[in-house]
Length: 286
Image (tube, rainbow, N blue to C red; front, side, top):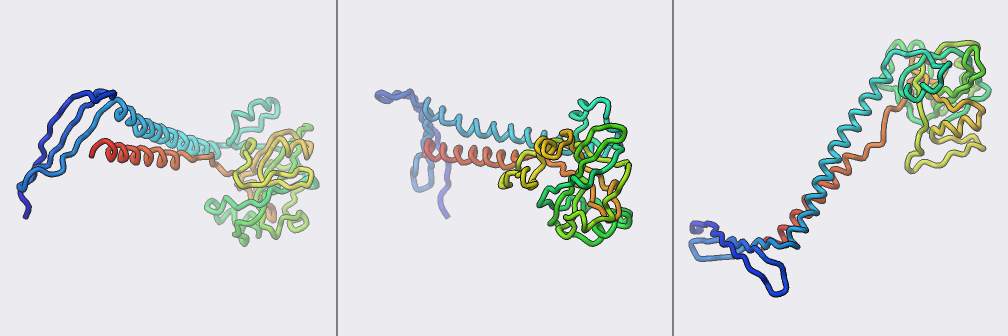
């Protein structure tokens, strides 16, 4: 067994030649066998200045915590907006559409199936929300196709009693039903009433190819480019699951997600703060 140990602290203030004033705190380990390994914490203008690095990175980590909380709250609010009761499509005041993003609206009109196109590849988003009633009413596509590989069917839609044509994402289809001929039963004709979620443009995701409008190849939702290419108004909506028809695309493909990298940022800043703090002690407390 070793002897009794204790720490004896002494302080000395002095000035080194050509250097700043230095406060030296000496920690001396006293054991039964004598004095061993004196430790010194050197505080100078330079050493204190270097503490700003862990302090600033810690502050940035705290700021990212606030940003993460704000982003998660915003996503939650948007999800609740999609579950609100539908309101009439504002045909008489289209400027209101910007404030109705992610809100359900009721629209009456007809699909222009001969002008439909696809956004592909697309995964199916509604799996956890499909009820037995939807399975019975939406036809074979919803009851037997569970693959995530497929496409979204985008169809121009003429609003009833007007010349306004908008873009409707009718929903998801598997690769086996991307052609209109393979789902004729779902190509509803005439005036219909649908519920849909108002959407805006989608930024090109990282690692996703650019759209090629001239070739009819769409990888992401660029509303302005789609509207220009297909001669419609720059208005885009996602048909809800209850607007699905027998043999047609599966509605309810609204993806409520926002770019959220705040968690990785806060981990990075806090890690840098911890690392630089340890480095500071290793440098100035020896």
